[in-house]
Image 1 (tube, rainbow, N blue to C red):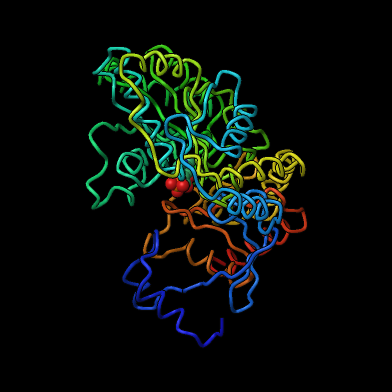
Image 2: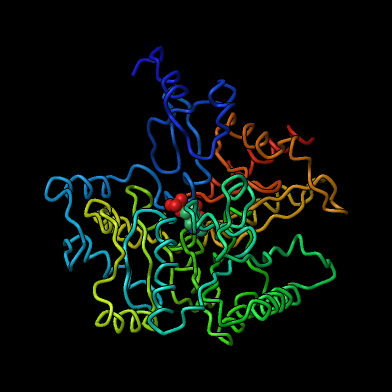
Length: 456
Ligand code: PLP
């Protein structure tokens, strides 16, 4: 398309963008970046500018951009059979094959996968399944869900409630009453700075148990958490955290949902984050990396324990009253099959682990002694850089200073995309798994230059 076309004006006049400052965008105060192509770790806008995408879109294009194998699989499926539904026992070769591939990769105690289209709808499914499960078991009071402050589980009514970030609640009348938030496993900002990681993990578990006892364990159905807090600031759990939490949940017969939308299919260098941290979830949420975002697809992986109850309830209750028109959409499922195959063929899970170690070490080497460095943290191919105004007090910058958006803007001008995380002075990195050491060096170099440019 010609550059003097009206696309930018159409954008401001017609397009309601996600997670965007509506007024600034309408007034033309925020950039309209029209992305026109991409290959490997690079994206390109229609003005011909190239960017190294160190956040893989929204940590989702895990295999990297422009793989013809996935595009061809999508095209072939669209030509052969663009759609059929999954109601009343229907399936397609693609959706059945993909379910087998997912279950082959999932932890051994998992049983079946239900397909959706987004991480949000998969978590909505999870909560409905949890309520259904407890109703079948004759425990109608056991319904509340515990989530963490700083957790991110989506933007729906229930999932926006589970999300523990202020922006996603404010003025939306959320969270819903069935949701309770507990302490974030955010060691850097623990209240008692004298605690070791292990002590802080134990403290989080004690707080959780106190909350459960206050509410009554017979009213709490489940706990949901990302193995690593993602959108809440790229925060890996402190040592011993998941074991301590799991023990409390097991004691009170509370289900665990591992939201692996970011960590599923290799980002930590293991197939699932549950494996990395030794979690034993009853439900696993998957999305992003399932198709590397070549097509929208998500899933709820259900454990043997829950499946048995759901199956047992069917004779009494009839078919499960839960379905999306596009559940197991064959075009998306074909993208998933090709994507998981590519991850295996290119050995990308192992590469993500190796490159993650390299990225975190390189970031520490380059920036560890900057006067405004709070913490550089990450497991696998996730890295969070938290800046502080004052290192001794860990004082944050004023929100109005927009420190991280400014740094990330300066990085984009130098050809690297990172993400200013929505809460706190945190820059997030989650590149595609195919990134090389040389490309990581560029990311780190540009990050250092931009931080120095903005903060000195
Ligand atoms: N869960 C986690 C951990 C996520 O990071 C996200 C999105 O970033 C979601 C759920 C929601 O997924 P979606 O945006 O596809 O609805």
